[in-house]
Length: 408
Image (tube, rainbow, N blue to C red; front, side, top):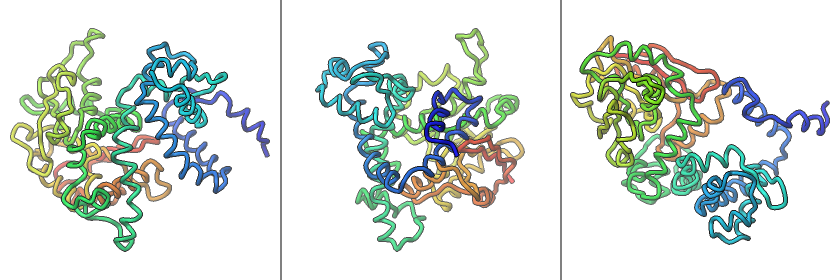
């Protein structure tokens, strides 16, 4: 049996760069988490759940709001004292000291000397990627945290039945607003709207294998028909998935690659209140068209007969009845034998499903009375709309797969 000293020595120097690829890093991370759970006492676990989570998120949000991570980066990003950070931000020295030592105690920054801290990749990202900080802003404080706080009480009051009605679920119970839904709440909450879009962009960027690395998108480009959209991203938010497609297939002017997809060949669809946060000019050189659309209604004539209709984390927001209506509204726009529907979503494995998928499943329950689905559940839903599954593309150690479907 290895001693504590041997175990600790073996872990020294291990970081995200220690692995050949992302799949290997995730395997190692999950194994380390399992090992951590085995050596933690019940109190260790409860301490993390009940004390650490709330306290540290409060400290992080305070430091973000004070401008600590941005000012630190602007000052060069080298090890720095709390006194210097207070000077840079105009915040109280004692307050910064208390907040910094709290996050250092969770290894979010590294204490390298007396009240002196070095940045970790996490701290660098908070400064370099503005949407990343939004996770700790409106997304956490206006949505996730209060939403989960009321979930146990809502379920208890409803006789411990599995929620399936999105119009009478925990969200309305929490807000005490029986006539609202999640998307109305997001669109009408100034503290949340942009932060929600930012958080979905981060979810796509950091948590998921890019869809262009899962599905052979070169086959999409090869099948283009003149005058037809190539990809219609339904419920596409800020357009982050179309930007990934464009980066792969639209050429790179900086590298002298002037290839360009036809103007308007990529279409971004979402509700008007979501699209108001989209900077259209920054999306592309004209390849992407932005169109307000409610996916419960039929596709307009301009988007009929596209090669690909793409839905990323759309259907998991809706119980089966509503998800079926979304699919049935789309099917008439699809050309049989040509159009493809790509559903980029999680699949709940029958055994040992990924922790990130099961957490997402409870998120869907709390916000929408919806759920993540198993392969069998996906196949049943797709067939009910008059579609058939062509293939399921499953990347190794990835949270989400791509289900390719066509008109049956």
